[in-house]
Length: 409
Ligand SMILES: *Cc1c(COP(=O)(O)O)cnc(C)c1O
Image 1 (cartoon, protein in one colour):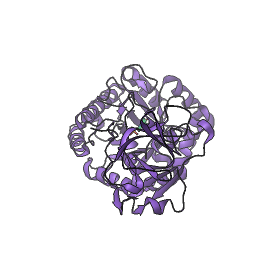
Image 2 (cartoon, rainbow, N blue to C red):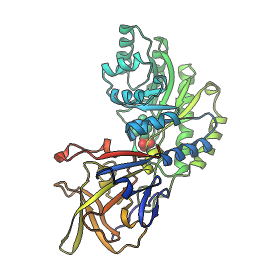
Image 3 (cartoon, protein in one colour):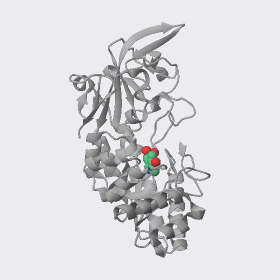
Image 4 (tube, helix red, strand yellow):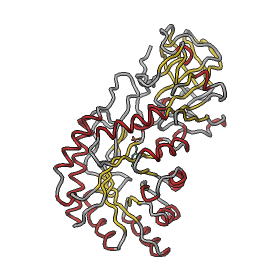
């Protein structure tokens, strides 16, 4: 038997049936087919409310669209957060269609094509400039179409988020401009007459240690102050990045966001003069949406092989690559998993839950303890609201796409 991650506390049982956002899985699947992602809007709203209550007054909360670009979810989030961060023109369009004011959208990512930059400039989306070459192209595009670009500079910090699942800062990186050489680029953009929007500093993802997140935020504010003094320009905004992690695996403890908020309040209160008029923001993806998502997949076959039991389900890594352990983790560990029709019932057996793909990587639960499930029963995989459908190789084996549904939107 191998352990599974903690089931988020937002889900309950009614007569043994898993309930998501007030509806039982039986009711949800009355008019929908598996595999299906169900997102509980109430959970997302609660996350945002908790942040608003704990983060320093006036701190902007941005949503990183790549975590989950499902349109109804974006439309809902558009009313809850202060901005969207996008990483492609496609996401920019989704963000705008969700009703987000384009001036509250920022665009990061290495390798922005000219057409993407042009679309951003035309719609006054803030471009987080990631290199000298990108700055040259941005300025040329602005001059050619006669529109002043809105530009911030994305910094590759000289530190990274400790205990972070994915390291995005520190060392040599394709993201952002190295902190040591960023001041001249800031100066260059300002002197060229862009609408300077400030700095974007993102040091990592998926950290559960409040002390590490707080320390990174402290270093980030310090770096923003130092660079702004060096470039002799006050940044209208500083995007502090995110890095707030969520508990996917056994032993993971939720991030103490109250402690992070308190520490950030102290840091901002003590900030240097050049940052006094600056607005600060954080950008979060998974922390806002991961726990809201449940992936429902139906058992097609139950089989034995050399003493082990396999539940073969109709969904797999083509929809939930991360839950199969093949996206952003080194060692495969089990996400929280349950039999939807026996939610909360005692475990009776050890099984492996596997998808229909022709690869042994297609494993959604590795020797997990569950109540007995038969063909036709529904398996629920939790923590699948972020980096699910859109971060999976949907075309692999040409199975149908998973459905998506927002409840309590
Ligand atoms: C992916 C990404 C995020 C969101 O990361 P999460 O771990 O989902 O919070 C935020 N900012 C940038 C620049 C990113 O690339």
